[in-house]
Amino acid sequence: MQLKRVGILTGGGDCPGLNAVIRSIAKPAMNYFNATVIGIQDGFEGLVEGRMRILTPLDVTGIINVGGTILGTSNKGDPFNYPVEGPTGIRIIDASEQAFENYRNWQLDVLFAVGGDGTMHIAHKFGKMGMNIIGIPKTIDNDLDATDITFGHDSARAVATEAIDRLQTTASAHHRVMVVETMGRYAGWIALGAGVAGGADIILIPEIPFHWENVYKAVLQRSKGARFSIVCVAEGAKPANGDIVVKELDKKRTDPVRLGGIGELVGEKIAQETGLETRVTVLGHVQRGGSPTPYDRILGTRFGSIALQAASQGKFGVMVSLQRREVVTVPIEDAIGKLRLVPPDSQLIFAARSVGTCFGD
Image (cartoon, rainbow, N blue to C red; front, side, top):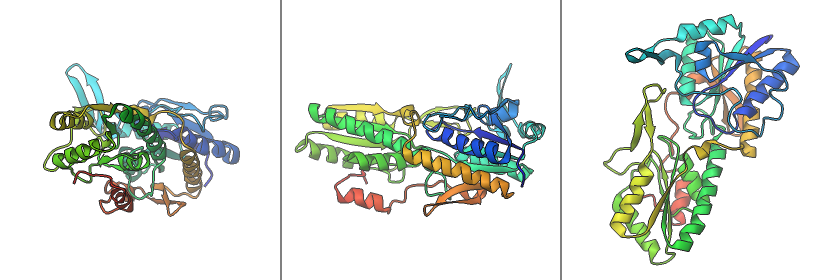
């Protein structure tokens, strides 16, 4: 298929590696297909509102190591549930036809949608409407199914690991319990990976509900020997027979639930019940920022180039995916049927338990 005009948008939360993907689509599209590359601004918001710019070779030069996205992004612009400010407050409307009209007006041969679970759900709906769309899986949470890993996750895990390394030295010096809260939403991949890599003593993840008494017991036991503890908590972790901690609800977002606060709760409870001096660090958006790791730069480049190849072959309604070290394409619907969560019987959890890590269960 001859590609003359291709569109790229980055949806959802930002993460390291997005610019590597944009570069790996735009450069070969310009060089080998002589195509015009349309950069849609601020994700699906730009598609609805008709905001775009034509990318030049200079725009995509020297950006592989740059975090964020040169196109901007948004997690509040689902065209099928689009928030509109009015005199009586926020109204939610269906702006999908308006978005599709812009796609047609720009005469796009294909739209590359780079994002996570929410972006892939939207892409799947547009695909059913007849849009030529290809998904590229991005999320620091690594919770998208049908791919072994999403780009952005390795960078976030590296940031969280470095934070734990730094907290360990100050925890040891002051004989404190240090609680560090990671992102991840309903999946514990960041907390588990960073916790194991950083040598955390206790790791609490959504997939394994914890018991408070087991957490207290673990830090008290550590206090009699090493005299400090590192507790790595995923933002979606919850106690057995308890609920996740919700920071706020924002109906403008694709997923209105914003998690956060479990770290503070764990820190308060440990201090109250054990008498041990406890400090809490919430990593938050630090995990999304900065330069991508070499792994994410390479994976993003592979994803973008294979996505463009798929478009040239007329393969639409698919998502690029890493499976057994090879990048392939899968139907988008395969990626959105369920979240990719940490299996409680995974080898990594087994390895962590074998070196004495407590999961609170």
